[in-house]
Amino acid sequence: MKGHRGFGLLRDFDFRQLFVADTVSQLGTQVSLLALPLVAVLALKASNFEVGVLAACETLAFLLVGLPAGAWVDRLRRRRVLIAGDLGRAVLLGSVPLAWWAGRLTMVQLFVVAVLAGVCTVFFDVSYQSYLPHLVGRDNLVEGNAKLEAVRAVNQIGGPTVAGLLIQWLTGPFAVAVDAVSYLGSALFVGRIRKREEKPQRAPDAHLGREIMEGLRFVLGNRMLRSIAACTGSSNLFSGIGMAMQIVLLARILRLSPGYIGLFTSVSAIGGLIGALTATRVSRRLGQGPTIWIIPAVTAPFAILLPIAQRGWLVWLAAAGGAVWWFGAVVYNITQVSFRQGLCPERLLGRMNASIRFLVWGTLPLGSFLGGVLGQTLGVREALWVGAIGGMFAFIPVFLSPLRTMRELPSLPREPGSDRRPEDTVDEVEYVQNPVAGAPTG
Image (cartoon, rainbow, N blue to C red; front, side, top):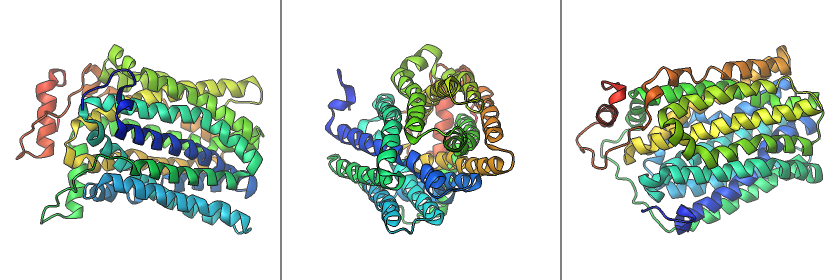
């Protein structure tokens, strides 16, 4: 697929369906991200520990099924997995307002819904990142990822404000129903994509365990991917602490209304939109490798403004600090995800993405659980301090890797030898295309 002028990839029918599906789904997701914890805090009077457990349940699936999901996805047509993931989440989230209406909603149900919806999200996300190269071609990955991140950023700006108002008007449980409907809309648009994948050929001696290990070896056998996984995983561990306790700080300690909490989140998300719109220029100016460590090193310290927030101007200063943090997170993600997708052979994309997700998203439930424990034992602000200070040092693994000085990152040759192991292909790419990195690292 060649690049398009004007609207770029949006001129392509299939990418446009994925773009619209993502837009609808992301808007609904922003509602649930605010509504579920507010249901726990305001409606069910959950403790700080229970709020942390709920946040952990939302990402626990990355630890439970993160690795096998990649191997399964590489055996399936990814478009069908996307549709199944959307429909599953619609049913699960739709059960929340029904239980509330019947007077039977409990924290246990919220835990179960969060875990099972997370399982659907794992399969959806692994398929989503693995499907994009097939849909747009490797030459258009940065543009495709940037446009989809822009969708996420716009919804992160407008979504929380809409969510806050819906929660005030409809109550939290019924606001979750909006998210359920959004997933139905997403499934509809994904189903309109015309470009079909061939079903992956499965070797006669295929074995799930060996396929999982092949994906892990691809990631862990490459020094650059290892450093990215370490950076992202440690950042997610400490941000998980902050995310678990942020709602408690805003709703219970500062006593902000759902509308103001939504506005706070929207202000913070403005940075994500700016990051999505400028990521290509930033990486071009700094160099792709330096971008991956400089941006988080400079922007992560702004998270310390959250634990000092008070009612009045200090809370909006914290929101502005969150905007800087989100800017850094989005620029970092666009740069490193595009690198990963361009480096990985087509047949390993699902397992590569699943392995990375297992390593980096698997720390989120640990961080959220730790946030709940710290919030219950030390206090909410103290937990937020731990998360903010720890996140400031997440960039160090990338800084200590060859990525530190690599202005242009290597990508997979167009016709790699079919008789080579994926690890050998990656090592050759590093050695031939990146003399700064020195000898092969694998």
